Every structure is written in C-alpha cells, then in structure tokens.
Image (cartoon, rainbow, N blue to C red; front, side, top):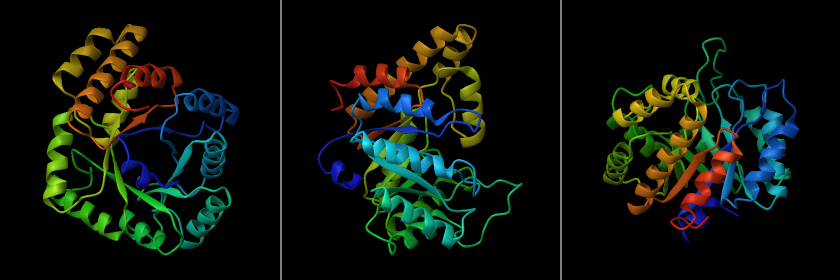
Length: 286
C-alpha cells in the first residue's frame, strides 16, 4: 500500500527505527519490531547507511521483516554517496521484497568520504525514482531550515523543487517547539507546497542523546525544555518520563492544529513508543 493513500483517509501515525550497530545482532531490532508491531503504526521507516556501505543490507532485511509483520515499510534512501548503479541495485532488491515506499534523501556529507556526483540533491534522486517504478516517494523537510541553507526562505524554495520533482508527502526533521512547525507549514503553503507534511517528534530520554541531536540537526531548545533537562539530568528515569510527557504534549497540540501525521523517532525504544502511543490513542487513530 502507498503511504499517500493513507494520508487521504486519516491522520498518519508512524515510527522510525534504525539498524543495530555492527557489534549487535540483528535479532535485537527484530525483537524491538515485535513490540512496535503490536502498536499498529501506519508504517515504520528504517534508516539506511549514507556512506555507501555499512548497514545498507541490514536496512533491507529490517524493511522486509516489517512487511512480514503486516506493516508498511518505508526504506530511507540517501544518495550523496551512491552511484546510479548502486541505487538501481537497491531498488531491485526493494521491489523483490515488496517494498514500494521510499524516503528519498541527500544524506549527510561526510568529509572523510568524497561524495559521488551522480546525485547531488534529494530532488535529483526523486526525479530518478519517478522513472524507476511505481514507488511512493517521501521527502524530508526542516521546520527550522536545513543546516546548509542560508535562510528558511531559501530552504522552502528548495523544498518546492523537491515536491515538483515528485515527492508525494514530507516528513519533518525533529523539533521541540511547535511554533516553528506552524510557521513552516504556512510558509510551505504560501509557496504552493500542498502535499501532506508529517511532523517528526523525538521523545528525549537522555541528556547525551539530545546534545548529539541538536549538534547534528540544528534544532533549537525551548526554555521549558532546557529546564526539564537541567532538573532531571541526573535522574535517568525522571528524565525519560519527562521526555515522554513533553512529546505527548507536542503531539496533542499538533493534533488540535490538524497536523497531517506524526512520525515518532523511536530510537529503537519500544517502551517509549508504547507509552506515547497509548497516551495519544484517543486523539490520533493508532
């Protein structure tokens, strides 16, 4: 089933997972999927190595396992370090596994790995995918602007190029202040971007996690969020519960403001995903 068809019927509720580190067994994520599958998300996306190697095969295996559980898998596909032939090979493997939903990404630029020139932007990949089969294509967007963009206005103009290339819907980078999302959504609409936009929410359950995420994606932290971290940083259980509560409050507010969907960055933590899913089940059809 195509994700775009779900948006036409309901507020979408989905999860993201990632392959385990090379030192861990794939059975670890399979056990997590058993628990996440019980929560009946509309789809589960799985991240993919942006470096041209690493966890690419694992991502396909995990996506196939998601499909076996009767849940729609979405395969992340970063392009900056992949040749056309490598992309073609991945697409053929995806088709063989019945995977028909792709999240098309440029991928993070690693100074240690020279980028391949076949695809410089996600929009290039989206254009290519449109001619490679009947895939549903999601794109990424950034409520506070992409770190590489000079302004949010420039970023939205680039997003319009991505949508015109054929992105069927969008998933946002994580954010902790809903006002950024609302302003971004208005700006996107004003620029003729009329595809569904799913809000990416990350429940923060430890201090190191948020410090790492803020460094890599540039999301800003509201004052009330900073106070939560400062108060509970030495109490892991309290910080976890506070992070869950904060994410729930974000989702309730987004639902009240007619969000198209919620994409929960689970960090492979089924306990956190369950707590949030149960809390919002009366608000969003889960």
